[in-house]
Amino acid sequence: MAAPLWCRLAAPRHAVLGRRESGANRPRRVALQFFPGHAVIVWMAGEGGTPATPMADDKGPVTHHDHYQTLGIAPTATAEEIRLAYRRLAMRWHPDRNPGNANAAEERFKRVQVAFAVLKDPAARAAYDNERTAPRASAAGGARPSSSRARETWAQAAASAAQRAAAQRAATATGKAGVDYVCETSIPLETAVLGGTATTRVRMEADCLRCDAKGVRMVPCGGCSGTGHVKRGLFNAQATCERCAGRGQEPTPCDHCAGTGKIRIDKSLRVQIKPGVVDGTVLRARGMGGPGLDGGPNGNLLCRVHVRKDRVFGVEGLDLTRELRIDFVLAILGGTVPLLRFREHIPVEVPSMTRSGAVLRVAGMGLHDRARERTGDLLLTVVIDLPTRMRPLSDEQLALFREMGGGGLV
Image 1: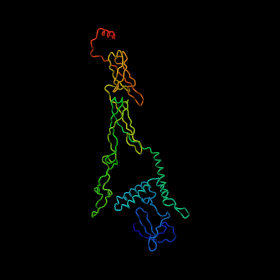
Image 2 (image 1 turned 135 degrees about the horizontal axis):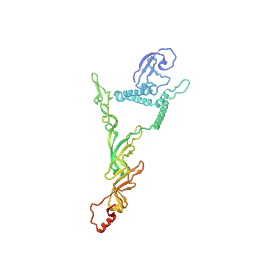
Image 3 (image 1 turned 135 degrees about the vertical axis):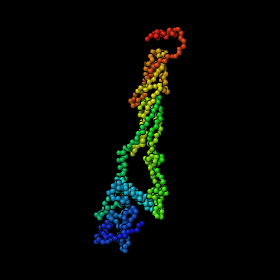
Image 4 (image 1 turned 180 degrees about the vertical axis):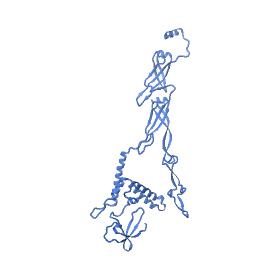
């Protein structure tokens, strides 16, 4: 406890102590005693110059710390002034910066934190100001509530106001959706028709592992070379390093992520392709994009699909095209021929007397447009394939062929 500082004040007693007392203005001998984080306590000198009972103003004895006095600011201070005062006092009274008096510094540091927690919130500050400026007991009557009850009253009001503000923010806050990742992939026509999977690479954000996504790394302090102490003065007295507050380490921006906590990486993804995808289709994977902000949803992954050309099948809109090679006997007599459509066989009906170049249509065997709910067909262009060699025929067989052909004239 600090020793009292005695002085003489030539002023009315009520001007010094807030007491209303009749009498002439005469010098009074008072003691001012200062405590870290406490209000100034004024003692009146009793008989023989000894301190008498501590006196207080009309508001009654101080039973808890005034938050404005704790931060050293006026009750009309702005939010920015409150923040600056808190930062200044927090750095001054941090226990690590006061190794010689850690217990007192920790107590003062806690009071600074409590004062800032109340005054930084508008609702809690308003409730605290109402309790702080509430009328006290007077001679006309009316009992002054106890300090514990008063603190309970404004604490409940502050909590209620904070709950209402939080509920309002939750009701009105929609958050911001994360960014959409865009990529492209190329697939064969077979995958577009029958479905399957495709591999693509997308550039996305990821947490920096070197700094645990904090954006800073702890390195040895440059002021004390990591010892936490420096030598000062003529006799090289050891003192706590102010640069690192005695920790021996200081934060520095991460060189891997440039202090952002995020890095860009190329990630390989497997994309599920549904049957019937056409060239230029954009596939959407919900929630696979960047993380949302302020509780917003994650972005999406948008993948544009390009269909490569096939050596056998062609594409005309939603229709698949290819050649159908048949022999002249099937062209004349007609029949059913199996056709390989990628990995599956489908039956194709060939009418009798089918000419070369005729187009046969197989309905529903093309590509499917999911957006317009339309499905193309399979278009087969007939090509009559004559044999390169033919076994010897009898006279009756040759006569039959000549009769069918009309003597070679069309």
